[in-house]
Length: 69
Image (cartoon, rainbow, N blue to C red):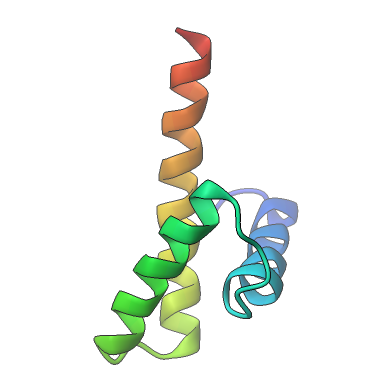
């Protein structure tokens, strides 16, 4: 669902930054913890990727709401 550009960007970011643990920003650390939880639960790469994208969107939306208030 949504813009193809956004989906591709999220996929590339999750694959290159989060799955390889190459970024150390505040949200990235939280996303890595969630990714590890899903990995321990037996989710495969594609399932984790989809869950990560949705979780990331929700985090970004919450941050956007905070900045607008």
